[in-house]
Image 1 (cartoon, helix red, strand yellow):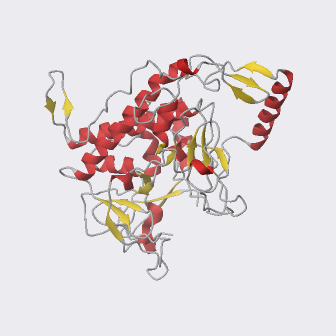
Image 2 (cartoon, one colour):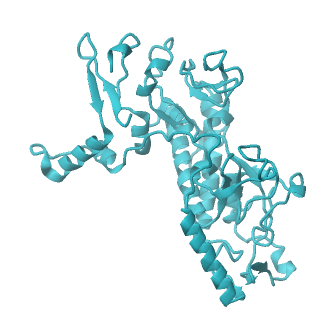
Length: 423
């Protein structure tokens, strides 16, 4: 069903009102251009909503189907042919453009530091919102990965875990943690992303693993003492497709003179430090707003870094690897893994693969009647949002404009005894 159903109870009997998003945007754009006549003023919220396109919750793909390619296959084949032709014309050449030549992109170093700081601030803010005073309750299903933000778990029958048929697909809720709200996929750390871009199967226990967002920041110029990396001062050569480094080992042994990443924006167990060096406590809505801003900054910064630094994901499982190539560790257990001998089917990743949004059902009135959870019969009226956004909104943060249509704030669900009156 392409439209969004909204019910507004103005009489004892419910009336049906069908709201089509495309018609709303067309009418609003026509009205903004002067076709509506009369009053021509518009509030800032309406102008902001008109600038943001309608976005609904993306449907999860089927487990036996491969993820869609970010870049069309024809474009990838054309690029491979051009690279092969370039190698034939000049077998020995110097790679000029970073980061393919082993150097970091200068204007993205500050972006990487901000992304790393935003990640630390996000984890610190979520820890205080979930485990501190006046914590927002988080629920997680015992048998599947479903997460719910609220005091009472919903009754929507979407469980696909063990023995879900005996429970009629109802979830069994238990208390959740910060890891249930936001989870970062792990990848292998590359000491030399150009000289040795792949991790083989024999090295799966020798090479450390870390969150993929942190690995992306390290490759982009952030120095973390726990994960050393090789910083070059000269570009590498490509001889018949093979990378050759003529830089002496003594010069390449040192790390970049850039200072390490900046300190976290929001430490987990401390307040905000003012100019006099004293800690000042902030309110829960302010903390939620800063945590939500850290989430948005981290995703936008990671999207900028991914335009230059390659990130790969498996087409059938959520595994991620940051680097020019995917690893060769045979650890895939998804569809058709027997045909690939357990290896991943690597393809270009998106920001949702690097930072999974983890969509949850939106609770319109968390302070209302807590004894009535979300009903399964009314699930088509409920919206969704990433777990971080839903948690921060319930804590008092304003709703971002990009998620307003996804959360269906303009839809009024009917009462439980009125849903059968709506077509």
